[in-house]
Length: 405
Image (cartoon, rainbow, N blue to C red; front, side, top):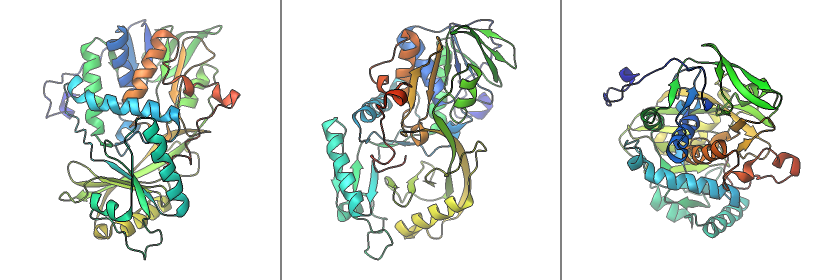
């Protein structure tokens, strides 16, 4: 592992053999699994735990996202957990003693229709009531924040204004994973790569262990944190999750000098654009409409995404595409996550974040760790329990927040 981190030669990785038993097992070595392990050790003193990753550390959706961080969601429940996450982001570089290039450059959410404007201004008001920084900008103010954007009237979807969250931004996703991994490792957490869970053992309604390709492991707490494959793992314990899995695509360009100072998102035309620290333009789109697990999507989605980006940013017209990628995202009925106990004692699920998983990484880890340690939800994730799909207390962010991500 150290060979992958030449700039951090002090990061000496150990890949231990699994013990016969642990106090808790986290399935999934991505951002949420690593953050959960860190907060279990830091906040709850649980260090006899293992993270089981079937591939390599943070090689799933953590390596396939566009690194946007924000908390400007409409509903109280969403705003609360994402704002907690953003506040944790603000302190983590110092806390983890690791520079993962957290850059609070702000996020613009564009409005292109009168309905967009009304929904966006409503969201600004709701954000302010929840203590989330939010502003409404007219087209000229949008231009002042992002000088390269096209605000002319001859666009298919003219810019009629935007919400703006100044504290939002981006971070370097692989460094975030290594930062959590290093601290969890220092506190004694076992992070075991190339260890695939093939079964979850139950005695009655109680989890008693997991089966893996490296042998059985006994434990009374199993926490799922696997984006894109949550349903399959839950099925192993006889639990059915109300989620669907869709491809989500993004791309990066060749390197450029800094030209794009913020993050621009447009739900109406399904594109969002930022510029990474090294200089690549990072662009993403909405999810592909079909279900799939192949970590790839339809070309037409990328084509439409690029057309929208070039219209909003004519300066990008001659930019060359460097690479595209796809991830698998789990989506619930109300487009909000599940961070919850299940009907099986000792089985916990963290899934359904859709396109919000990266920005929610520390908040998810913080609340999930509390739920696992206490067998009761934290107040911030209590609304995101599985039983809301039975009671009807949904948190429908799908269209309400005027953004799909």
